Length: 169
Image (spheres, rainbow, N blue to C red):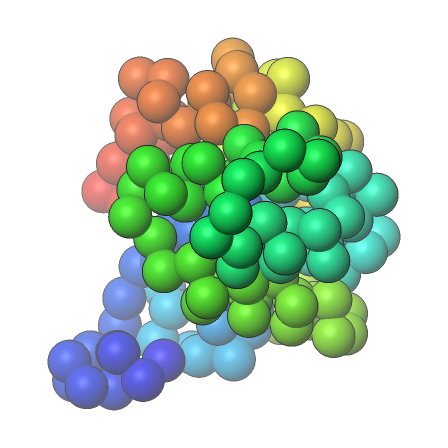
């Protein structure tokens, strides 16, 4: 919200993926300037766990993998893949680690997310299982399932096309 404040925005669309989707949901629940929302890489865990699916991804091991400068041997495959993807994107790993620690501090107030919302979920994404549970918990949401796993769905052509379709609509 501080970025929107600094830019003087009266209204804005918000897009977030994975941990960014949790941040986007929390922002949309608090900031009435969010007019449309696209979230991806999430499913029932937002409703059942409050955010990223810790049943699949051990948050503490993810934090360790994000903060280590050493070898990733011995870390779970999901944490290694997340770290490698963060490095590929040039992400701020300490910030991601802080978000991973904080994301499960409490329930996500889904009833306060009243803007039109699109949930994009990969058909093989183990972090976005049963996405209809999340869609059903949001007052104005729809679901689009895209071929791919957690990292593969993002590069599918229909992923970007779906975002543009909602935001242009």
